[in-house]
Amino acid sequence: MSGVRVWKVLLGVERRVVVEGVDVEVTDDGESVVVASVRPSRRWGSRCGQCQRRCPGYDRGDGRRRWRGLDLGTTRVFLEADAPRVRCREHGVIVAAVPWARHDSAFTAGFEEQAAWLAAHATATTVAELMRSSWRSVTRMIARVVAEARGKTDRLAGVTRVAIDEKAYRKGHRYLTIVTDLDTGRVVWAAEGRSQATVEAFFAALGPERAAALTHVGCDGADWIHTVVKAQAPQAKLCLDSYHVVAWASEAVDEVRRRIVRELKAAGRGDEAASLKGSRWAVLKNPGNLTGGQQESLASVKKTNEPLYRAYLIKEQLREVFRVKGKRGRRLLAGVISWASRSRLPEMVDLARKLRRFQDLIGNTLDHGVTSALAENTNTHITVLARRAYGFHSPEALIAMIELTRGGLCPPLPGRTS
Ligand SMILES: [Zn+2]
Image (tube, rainbow, N blue to C red):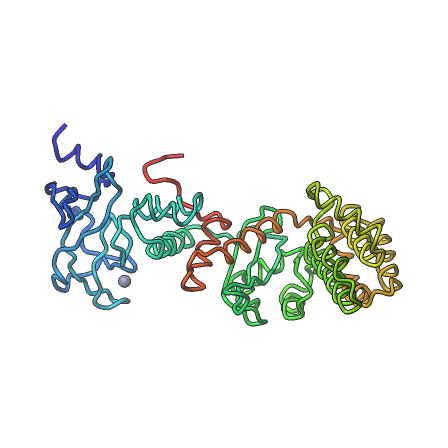
């Protein structure tokens, strides 16, 4: 095999790339790097960097350019080539497309795919360290890889049951609207904002035919979602996702606990207040997930604080509603509502009012057995992503990361067929 062909295999470049020569260069830091001079094949010709349509050349641009490629063993690799400009009918004078890299990137396509794949499987620090790149440039690679994948797949094809959710990020000051396929748990659409206009944008992307095919739309109590769904997909049953409803109950229980702590402190019973403070997770977590200490804490709440324990039982009974489902679930829900409204705990009375207001929508969830387990999973994952010190400098970067990890847009590792 000729040296050039061996290099093509080593560099992982395809048929449309010609390797003109390979050299080892020593950087200012004394690091040896491989620099391969390449050019697109004649058949590739001259193409627009944006749309890849063939178009006439314009000038030589800024001369030679380099693209970082995947390491060879422990050695960094660069591809070097001319970067002429072309004149596209649609995009004007623009740097020509090259077959080994995405437009406007200083990395090869394979390098970006490996970084994106890794970002979906490892922490930001790990990715940056292994790829010898900053996390910030990795987020840009993810954005390019995901944008390309979006163009190749129609994620809204065949969806019939979706959940529409809002998600806070940047310490709750900004929001994303996320649409999840309830059957697969996949994020099928996401955009910045939370308003009627955002939900309308989703329906615009969906189109009227597919909107008519929606059977269930899960959501929280947000009117701005309900209004648009009723207008755009009147046949779809609006369902309140169980995790939103249970979250309302958990918040109410937490409010009860905080109020009692305040009252105990005011009455000079600081010790009791302190022990109640420590019971926070015991009364909020699912009983099955409690640690030994939390179980003890719950037992002591039961003994010493009847009102808080009552609030806890109401919340647990509400969780049971979603486990039972169907007609029995509806009956149980009615029972929980009347129990909460007679509980003499103002927070639980408020909860009862809210549950009554949305009783029909909760009933839809119970009737249709729409399980939101997958969507809930996705929801938790996104919460973690949005909170993690990942340094997403823009909503687009966060959305790209969400679609990479939960939208089915993660590329395979370069060079692997399966
Ligand atoms: Zn173009």
